[in-house]
Length: 227
Image (cartoon, rainbow, N blue to C red; front, side):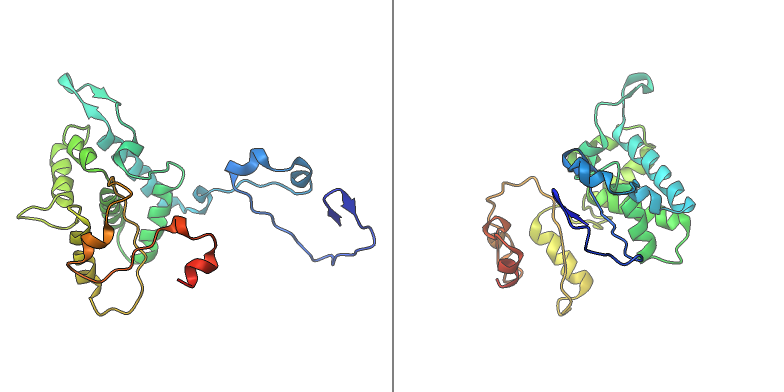
């Protein structure tokens, strides 16, 4: 057994003992080489968790997303001026589609492949930027489909499926969906381009009482739990 530069040959370990070290690939360059040399190394990604069916759905979604991000100019010439990160907020090519497919299939067991793909697309539209949705009408995607998702994203007389107008609008729709008296806690992440100093409490005062805390004020998890 070794601890740093010191070793104790008199400390015995059971033969059945196994130690598994999980290390994020992004931190590999800063890892201590002697530590890494003691382990058999295996690389695993979220892609390794997917079934063949899930990989097929990921490929379909990737093709669909790239079509939406590719602008088409005169004479139907494609121009790759925007990336998927420009279109979908927080998009990660290594995780976003893969984790989305796993989550949707877990929550909607028994759905057909087409239904799963449609649900995944709707979830992606929910994290799209407004300007990206507008650009999509000039993209390599079929015109009718791009207009369909535009109607889903922006409220209209025909559709109001997603709520991107303002914060109060979103939470009113959320409470209507889950029920105002629902005692179960909700974890919601809202992506916004608003200023960090926006008065969130004032935005929501009309619909409910809120308590606003900034995570930067907490130094430990215990402080957050005791708040």
